[in-house]
Image (cartoon, rainbow, N blue to C red; front, side, top):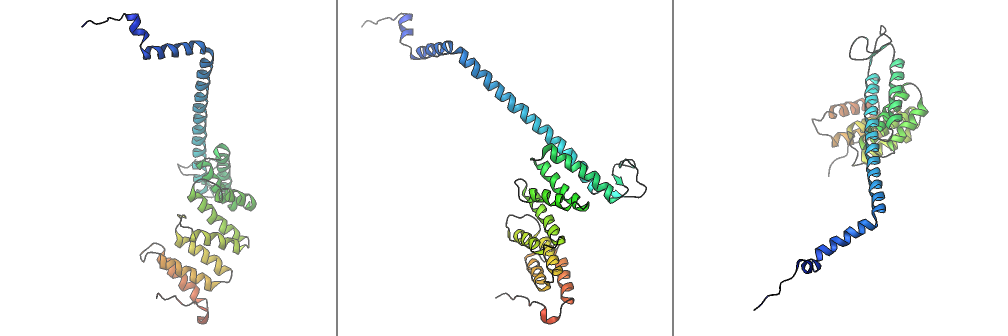
Length: 260
């Protein structure tokens, strides 16, 4: 039986892979200008994202440094013989007065929020800025900063800390109901990662100051029952209950709930 030999030209003419490659080459040759422009566009976009990412990282680093400076000033010690340079006597800053240290801290926190307000460092700085402004008597500015953190997006813990600070602000401003609502909401919120015992004591203090000592005792008892027997808060809770009971007539003391 004879065989038919194919020439190289005939073999290549029946090769589907070769035909597809030739078509692809022809496509690139016909559209080289458009493809070149598309490649350049992709490169520019990638370069833009990289540049923007580096810019954000740089801003975040600056904000973190400013936040650290502000926190060091916020918790600095006060001494009458402090010098103009807070670091003149060592690694820990020292100021002549509380007002001086809070003014210095406010400047750092404010710069951090301006540098990277939308980032976590910026949100933390805004929270501390609110606390600092409360110390300086700038209550309206403090309220706005704390509310922006408490009801904004971002770190959940910092948001709850801002709500806790707002509760004190409302209580000090005569809005006991507003303070109660914030604290009761956090105590009931399963996502709140702040110690519920601490929130309960804060709420009880506000209730007691508002003349609601029976409600305050009930709140403390609930917090004590939910707290571990040897927990860090349990003794304080029991001490607060005893203190409030001493200030109340026996007939007005709420009875302890008995378990069925």
